[in-house]
Image (cartoon, rainbow, N blue to C red; front, side, top):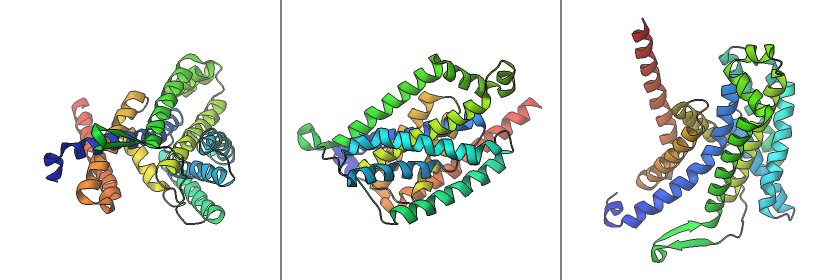
Length: 296
């Protein structure tokens, strides 16, 4: 801990790495915020979509393709997977109780975990991009090239999603459905198509995130839960429909995790994430209780 004061460049290194890590968390959280806001579904399969996107990139890299080809490929494959899951199961639970959607998506996440375990195995996998490392402050601070690429792609996806929702006709239909699905139906919006698109788009964004995770860290068939919890926590903090808030919360979480990892050890990293989620839920519950009391 004292080394962060004695050698400030260590703190700067942790800060930069944390922000770049957080950018990837933001990608997975975008999709959860979209599905939750439009369909009122908390998608527990979020982390499994991330892992599946990573495995698509790993499989293509092993087949001899450039690793970066895996990013659009993972997006396309996961879009199709999301569409199929929606048509097979999710459309049955839209507009149902939130608890039912939690159980249904939890069951799908277990199925996807076992499917990935059978197809890709239980060993951790990663992809070497061959990108170098940028040296700053005479080499005291280093930034891996793949982390800068991941950060740039996150910003690109955020801007593209914002422009799509704001200016395209189908994007406007998505926003109208999120505000009031019944009114949107009366106005002629095909809400079933909007739901299918939203769920598939969420899966595609997770696929991009998974591709970047495979190139930055490692992926494993049963590692998805951590990304689901991170996404859930980021959306809770930022609020639905708040894209800049999602980015800020994700960058903050990435930075906090990185400092906890350095100070207490990597074994406490996930423990910190789950503990922070409990604290945030308790605080949100207390805040909601005070608000209800005020309204009375």
